[in-house]
Image 1 (cartoon, helix red, strand yellow):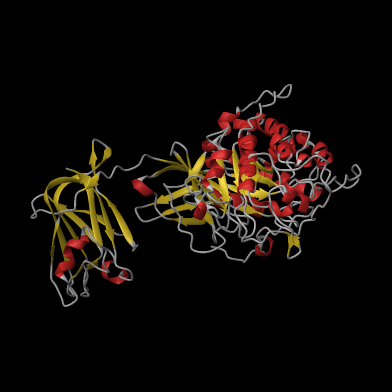
Image 2 (cartoon, one colour):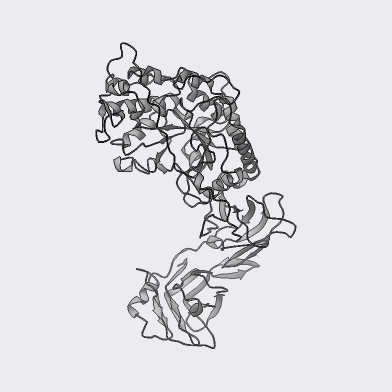
Length: 616
């Protein structure tokens, strides 16, 4: 592969750094005295507000649930909070930093949703609250707790949910359960916390947990979930400093009160020790590097201000897109990748919007190879270095494989491993333009060659491979097989022979002497239908097993060659077929299998494992 080292983006992948917040200090309204009891807070179940006029959805919220998020490829992470919400240059005069209602009222939902839809995002994660816990929606729990200024009159969360949902885009919410240090001294006193410590409103980190705070947070989470139900598809739980919410499984219960199907991410799996399992809430990361894929949800930070309002682009659209593609092709991936893009109240900064539009064009051209696909199990590509050069995705029905070439090879030919399960490529073409691609395939490798008049795309060349059905290997036939070899030597250990077929793997299971024609004979104990033989080499034995030949026999006397290795690999998959009526059928009758090498120079035969598949 060409490896002209691309400009490194690593300096842009810094983990989220939250600046010291401005600590708001003010006198609470008269009459606010103590926190209302936990029973009242936890029992608060506000009615869902009526949908806005005209909020007919093209995609119902229930269609944007866990399965949708699991298979999504990317979303946008937005940190719109009172401290970081601004009008674009030349816009309206800026309201006071802590004027929550002004900040909520200023947000242009349609302009935001248009930008998100144009980029192609499948979901948005929006800060429900962040600095000093200013919630972008009304909240009885906030009022009852003595924090009336921490809830907006406008239900911005609900409006964003409705506009996104009707476009088929899911909304998730960022929340945090331990950032009480952002509250003023007077507000903290409502929960029983003491005076300032080390310049911050106390207590020290060791003075935790706080049952009053726990009840307040759980009540707030439950209120949010009950209000929005399935209009909100998931929640992203942050952690601040070393504090961990105790008995953290309660967080998931509260957040799923109104939507049992809600996806929950937790920052780095931080709450696992406190009881929030990774089955219940997936691990997520605050940073991300587009040079490789991640199976857990991560976040690409393409602008100058990382998480908050970005005005300049540090990672171009093409590289962001390749980061999304690499995650889409990463084995075990779920939930895609976030791209951190926070707008002004009324628009995105022009350079950021331009990057989003450029990304949207790349997405629109290639989305068929990403939407409703899975990391490929048909064509599994080993990633040996960063940046990842090639990844593959499978269509949901398994009939197509999409090969994404982001760093092209020298020349016109791409070299790939063989397809799994004995599948064969029926046809190959380029996604853009639909030109036919030349195929060369064997049991050991696949080659795809561009037409002479077609050049590699500078961002992502996509091949569409139409593939045949999987080769049914059947059941294991060799569990009780026996082994006979042409010779033995001092390196051979008969106690390991049975390990050729089962048991603990050893460096090698048998070792013949140096011969011109060393062989190993496997007896299955009865005639079976043999379909596939998996042959695992000892590492570094290229010269000893090069050109390995496999023959089969029903009686051990009359042999027929059915396979020969064309090149050396660590594990060979030998398919056993026969011609029948002009078609190729899987399987041949055999009791004995012989593996051998032939040559003028004596050499030993050494193998680590052999597994025979078929039917009895």
